[in-house]
Every structure is written in structure tokens, then in C-alpha cells.
Amino acid sequence: MSDFRYVTKAEYSDAMEDLKSLIHKVQDEVRDKFTFRYDFIGSVARNMVTMDYASNVGYDFDVNIRVNDDDENYTAEDIKRILKNAFDKFNHLFKYDYSEDSTRVLTIKVKDTQHSKILHSADFAVVYDCSDGRQQYIHFNKKQQSYGWQYQPKSYYELDERIALIKNHNLWKEVRDLYIYKKNNNPMGKKSRALFAETINDIIQQNFE
Image (tube, rainbow, N blue to C red):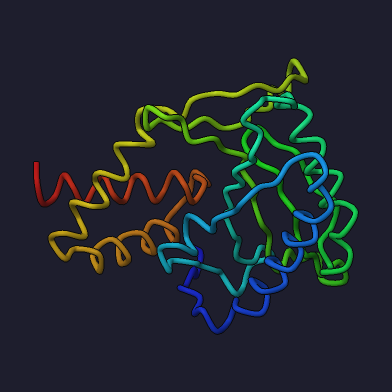
């Protein structure tokens, strides 16, 4: 059984400031090609950062990057490659390892190699907000080694609506309690994103359905 607990803002504030400094260096590096803005999302935005202090994996940050390329001068692959190269140029200044390119995100990690631990990590998703209210993200097809823009699934938008309903009925403490329970009772090793969505759906079913 795991022992996940909520991490206070004070515990991760220094790491978050370092991450912001890294992002600002990347912004300057790619400015002659495109500009971008960024937002911390997920656990940081919800004040639900967790960590199992006895494990070898630390807490993580989730960041959305919104690239300003309205004229579409760059392909999805170009954008991902330009950002990856820029991060890799400066990662070492903040003790991050080289970027790892996965299906939805670029991941960087601060590692304690002596103790085989990941102290913390950050996942960067490149997204685009469409005029019709939908959102796209850069998807990396590992099998085909190809990149493209994909729309977020329907469940992505339903989750925000359900969160709003829960908050309007002052049930957020129930969300926090159930989420940390699920983190500590997770034999299938589900990702935090999936556990959070599952938590929200359970609270909705218990209180509104």
C-alpha cells in the first residue's frame, strides 16, 4: 500500500519558481520562430499535488503551452522539436534531465541518481484553443513516429462541467479525501489523471445520480 499525502505549496514553491525560470529561457530561445504562453494545470491548479515520501517518484507539475502560430508556419512536429531542443539546451541549469517525448507531453525530470529517485518532474502539453470552444493538442504516434493535432476527447470537457457542479455544492473536501484514498489504493497503477477523473465521476454518482 502506498502512502501518498498532499504536498503544501511551501514544499514545491522553489521547484516551481525554477521551472518558471526554465520556461522563460525557452520562451526567449524560440522567440525568433514563435512566442508562447503557459499555464500550470492539473494538480497545481487544484492545489492537489501529492507525493509518496517513501517511494522513488516525487511530485509532478502539468503545464499547457499555447503557441502563437496563427499563420501555421510550423507543423506539429516542428513545434514539438523546436521546444524539445530549447528545453534540452537549458534543462541542466535547473538540474533537469533531457526531455522525454511521449504521446501527449514532453517530460523533464530532476533525478537523484545516487539514490535512484525522481525528485520531481514536469509534463508539457502543447495545446491550441479553437474558436468553437474545443481544444487540440499535439499528439505523437510512437508506432508511426509521426506528429499531428488531435481534438481532446468528449470526456475532457465533461470533466470541467462536473468539477464546477461539485464546487457549487461545496463538495470539494469529499473530492480531496476520495482522491488521496484512490492514490493509496491503486493496484492497477492507474495514472493520476485517470484517478482524478474517476474520483470526480464517483462524487457525481454519489450525490447527483
